[in-house]
Length: 217
Ligand SMILES: Cc1cc2nc3c(=O)[nH]c(=O)nc-3n(C[C@H](O)[C@H](O)[C@H](O)COP(=O)(O)O)c2cc1C
Image (spheres, rainbow, N blue to C red):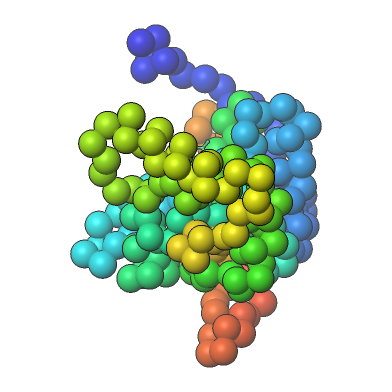
């Protein structure tokens, strides 16, 4: 386990306030494009953190499926552990770790279910077998063995053979409405650059302007 004793130099490329776009969502898109160009594996994967009804934290990887000026869109099962947690507490976090670029983006915000029409549109864009899978897995619930899981899938495949697969009402999208977005750039000697955008969400979902600040590494 050599990695435990390695001290890698994270480079000289700096990040300062003048390098960043005024809109952090546009800046995020730039970094995502650069992560794609650098051929990072699954550059749109992020670690989603939730807190459940009993204040227990849990994280897992999901895929970003859309980003615009409203926020970050991903899709999942609304009855999964993450779905249950978001229903009890909409505060979530997201971590994009593009380690080979010495970059990470940290997001805090509130997750909202998207409009059913938006979930329908995204579900409709998925491959047929992925759509079937949404019907054949009660995500996060125990099952006795793999054979039973395969059986559920085969039954759903047979049911929807040659037919359009409707979106199950327990499956759909969330949008993370961000209140904090931090751009982190690794630097030499652990003196990393951290630039954070912060805003507040008031009544009726009205957001304040983004404020920008540098954080100590
Ligand atoms: C690279 C990667 C991408 C994933 N993408 C998704 C996704 O977009 N949606 C999803 O529900 N689960 C996705 N998963 C599976 C989740 O990590 C997790 O196992 C599942 O959502 C159940 O989480 P929960 O029990 O905490 O709700 C992905 C896993 C990996 C490793």
